Length: 336
Image (tube, rainbow, N blue to C red; front, side, top):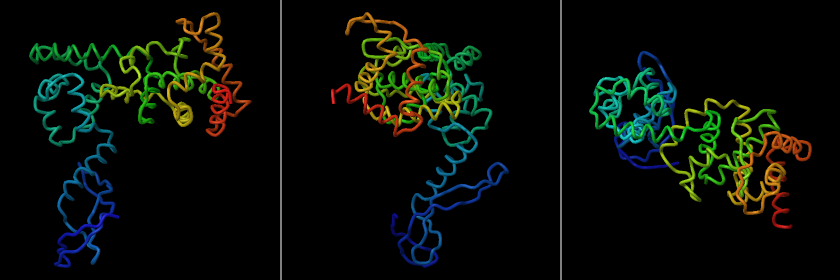
């Protein structure tokens, strides 16, 4: 526990204090709500102390918790939106149908209404929605600002070439892992599809994967992230994917967690080698030389059949059994 010193008005002396979390009730917009805030408690008398920075900290804590409770956008969300579309505060306000200084007020800390928050969030998560708002209010902003932002709209639209469910899965993976390379992402998606067939008896997403030299690949996903090459995927524009997690149900999330917590411990090259020992990729690559390019589809039926067989052999509904399967594949790969 952190202990500092400050002046206690009750003790009339400089005393040490401890920072503790306390529940407090506050009236906001006519509603009494409970928040957890950080308080400075005098070590001598046990009373609250006012220490430098504590009030500002409490304001931030209440603001963050209130926005989360009411599902409202944050100040950071608004800055991200401005950066994504290369648009200033006043033009953004007008484009979204607000008053000219509304966004400025929000950036200074004013909390938006749920209605206005939803408009901002829709623009943040959907370039199509932002395009619609841009066209609706085209004549209300400078043509230079309109063209600059529309260029960004078109750039961002180009990454939404896969299904909503696929985007939701990718977003959930990003949220669950510290770093994901394009190669690793491809293999995790393949295993997520297989485990969904095996444990939920349904596909996770509609996309087909192809049997490339380096393992199963979802081509449209590859095109979205290929410029990261062997590096971790890191770009603020992919915050737009967060809104697509709503397409995942609890069964979907269980599958993704299962795969991320097991296969996600390994790098992309290791996962590439494990897919090379499994029949779905091998069957689709039949007749092709080791380094001969191929865009043959790995049929969903072969994926389904293969992973269904693993249920009986390993009971892959449990992480420890999935890890045993990976270990056995690794032993085969390395000849152990």
